Amino acid sequence: MPGTPMEDLLRDPRADEVLRACAPGLSPRENRARIAEIAAAEGLGPRWGAAWRAGSRDAHRLAALAYERGGSALQDAVVEGVLRAYFIDALDISDPRVLERAADGAGFPGAAEALAGGAEEVERFRHAESLLDRRDPLGALTLLRPLLDEHGEDRGIRLLAARAYYASAQLGRAAAALEPLVAEAPDDSYARHLLGRTLQRQGKAEAAAPHLAIAAAMSPEYAG
Image (cartoon, rainbow, N blue to C red):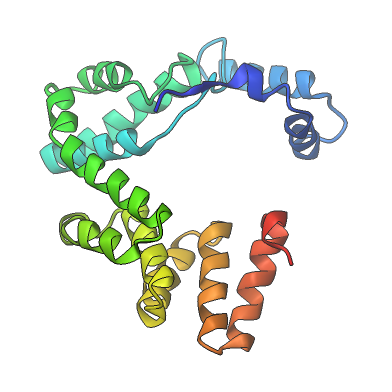
């Protein structure tokens, strides 16, 4: 899915509120200028900051492929290229052409073909999402099984499987899938909320309460 220009999103008053909280005493415009000055002083160029709100799934896949092909050195070079494209060159890293240029610059030729080779897996994942949205969690799990076997470390796949376990009342499996997700990313309010709901349905109200409270504090839509 193509990225969304940040210029439109930054017009949202809530974005200004977040920036004011990060730098009390400065206006949002002054804070953006301060960050740009710091970036320039560090040699990162005259401009700093994302211009696109972009999906990063393919960027993460590219980093994983780089590690498989050339180890941590190639992966580090690819990640640096992607971050430079996003934060300094103000490019949309959901665009395969941007990722291909970043990979080429890092010494990873053939990255576009490698990413395209996973298109079938991406389609399977999206179809599983669609089945879950249509209240067919068992069908979603059937599609996810080979993805879990092949890419069991992928957070998106694990979280979708946890949702399907929860929706199909396989609560033990849902909890087992969600607990490490929450441990790995304590600020993931959705995973934490789903873990709390799972524990709640298991009759473990005391264990569920902290997760539900933290999730509600991070994301007010989970309150109540």
